[in-house]
Image (cartoon, rainbow, N blue to C red; front, side):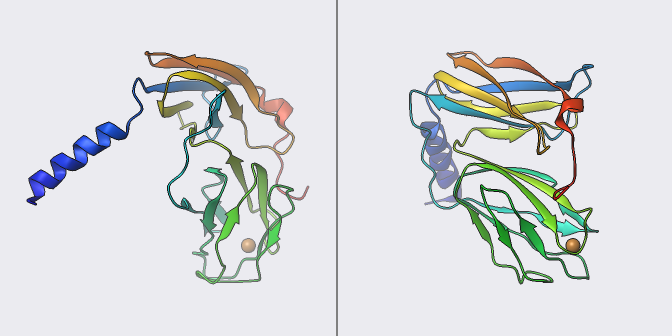
Length: 208
Ligand SMILES: [Cu+2]
């Protein structure tokens, strides 16, 4: 098969895989005074129908650079395998006490730490046993429809098929409860606004 033909077949298959009538959901996330809020996790769970199955084990990387987790906020689907490379030239030992996934790594450099599979939905707060200021948040969700807001506060969830969904917006803080609403998808792209009470979220490093 010539490369142009292969490209065409790929294109056609790509179209066929899209759910009929699938649309994009745009969520504008702001704080209480209307300022755009970055790094808010937004996810949609289908109501009355199962979420589409994953093909294979999704893999994600959270790096460590200059005593920071990069990215600081990650949203993944249940069952995702996360690698934690250490790009610093000194060692880290990372841990979580969170019920959704408790684990500790030895002190390690480079890629010595084995990947961790996050097999339960929920919030996981990561810390480092050596550097108290290091914190990261992983939100594990039972749906493939998730994203997080950009610097302009905009979060776009792509390819939602027709139906009802529970929409949650979750701000990275241990005390924060997701802001939940219900949406109905039918034919047209949808835009929603979510306001987050940042002051009530008591953003704190892990372990405090
Ligand atoms: Cu560290």
